[in-house]
Image (cartoon, rainbow, N blue to C red; front, side, top):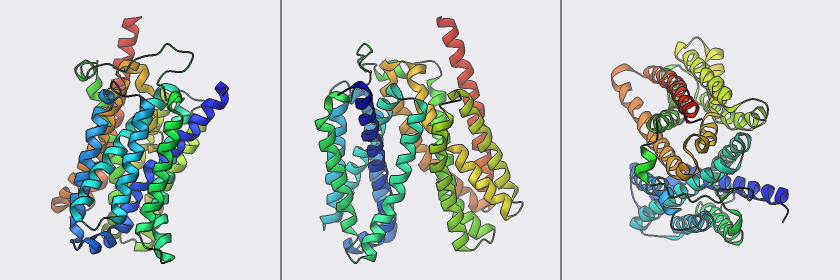
Length: 394
């Protein structure tokens, strides 16, 4: 296969991988009432599944660098998609609650490995534009998951058939990976092969690496926190009707996905560093407008601005990682970054919710603004530090 066609083929598979990564994330929200009824557990038992999922996700995302010293990237992707597919089938067919908890752990394990592995591969092989589009496809997958379950319910086919459909997608992708093992290399054909053998201890001692990890913690806490609490803020504090608040929440996620597509084109013209700074300034501005609570039009503008400005941050930060830490440490550092993002996405929205018991709902937009300001300052700090290190190494 010619190089150009091969690269296009790999990019298409990577896009499909991120659609499949987003699909399971969107299934549980719609199907959970039916799952809890089947297993005769309370609705608040969802927390058990989420804890199990996060534990599995963190296990593989933090150790992906170590795993890649034992097996190839292509084989890791193959096994991860297979594990994810089998876990989804367990959700569909198992009548035992404890097996669903186990399946949730392995679903998280497979997702964490796919997420980290594809990001490691993409950051070393693709441009920032392609990586932005890659993450846009995750949004398409996450949006499609609820639609699949809802369609099955509307057609009286049973919620579990949605899990079977997504499982088939995952298992098919596993077959595609195993048939294309030789294509999944971190270095391109024109580069010398590089082994991802950097130890955790070596990676964690790199200059300013903790700053970049904390940036991912903050970013995901902000991105997920806005999506998680926005509907409640609008309905409980700002007297917005539920239907309108639902549309505004959808507008946030829609602007995030659309922004990643648009920024993919912008990044073909502008440098990554400038785009990240501009985007973070946009997040600060949008967060400030949201906390002002200066009327519906201003609030909606703020919501769309936050979503659109958030769009390129995560994929662009991933794309600059190999240049900053070197290919030897890329898998380890991206694993740390994605793990930090998972923890931040869980802890910071939870903390914001706890603060409402003392300060009311309007404290949450204030936390968004504080997080956005810290994000901008930490990125500027880390960029200046890395540039000093690069200049001194010349």
